[in-house]
Image (cartoon, rainbow, N blue to C red):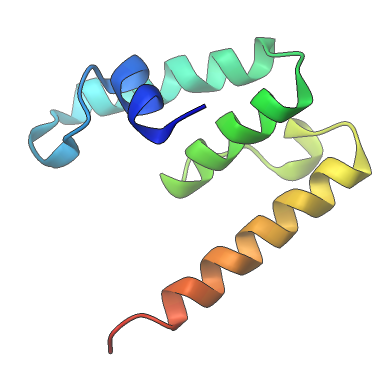
Length: 89
């Protein structure tokens, strides 16, 4: 899954700067539904990560049955936190 493809699928654009709040909310809801229906572990992780970047991901115990997947999600969150703290400032 490519980020541009996900943006286009859920928000009908790759440029979120002018996105209306209701369009954003609808896209997030659509993605959450897709996450709930997705059976492929890799795709589920990609959708969860996408939602996490927008502050809309479900809790790990809800999103992932497998402890390995929950641990990978924790690692992802840690990496994002480190990258955000390394930014200009």
